Image (tube, rainbow, N blue to C red):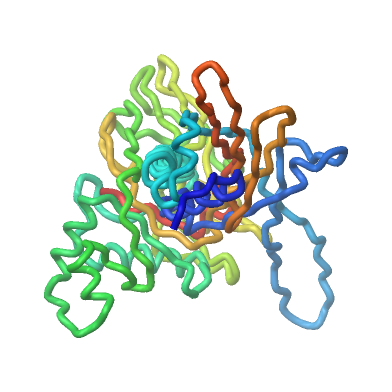
Length: 399
């Protein structure tokens, strides 16, 4: 069949299709598209609020005890613009679409997808649940079942939208450890053909080399302590650190005597509540400071999440060794994270501009013509924001 000149819509749709297929993590989380970001005369700014489920307490007996409805929300800032700039000739525009995609779009979308995924993976820092042994590559089904149990304990929906993303080391070790599970099934056949586990243990498994490495702060091997009883909320005053050490955003710790609770019955579990640090902190010269933490410490009411507040001098126990990097594989429900894309403005006075939306991802391509060299400089852009809107529906699996 004779080649034809490729149209803006053809190029944009094909680029978006390729990008979508390469987004393994982003492709398995909640993707929201909001065209109101780019509505002429009715723009909503750069932020989008996502409503979170309400929580209530249960009364005992016949006496009415009305509760105020306090709606909570998570704010997603849509301000990250990433793009790839390419240049091609008028001759290349006469290629068949498959040839054009392979030569021009495929490598461009690969690097764009990798950078969007790397951004989105930063949401691991907001996930406070963690299983596994620091410094040990996940290599058994048990560690993934531990992650499944943690998701269950935090009332994650038991549906087909649970996923695990692990790096190639963890994938190789896990596939090898489970190779004795022989059966005549397409899932196991795929495991040996592609090195992918597919679906097992209640999760769909994905392999991704952009799984982040988390480097712990320079915190020492002393035992830091809570400085002051009855602390609650999103900050924690501490002492007992060595002088001027750091605690990094994403560091995970537990507090002695502070147990997690079932969010509906408020009954305490047998394990300590885990917390993540939400901002880098450098301790003072006397080893004191205030950590910003998530979740907030709440000891009563509808949003209670711990059995009790920490006592004065309760010990903080951090995961991992100071100044050491660990891979952060992650198990999660689709609704734990959200990525929002928005329509970018369509410029006027250019050779062509096209914008397409597919599966919650909006992409714009703008092309201009340079008469001096008969070339078409072209920019491909995505505008997005991301947030861990319900981090309790996720669990890190440390390597």
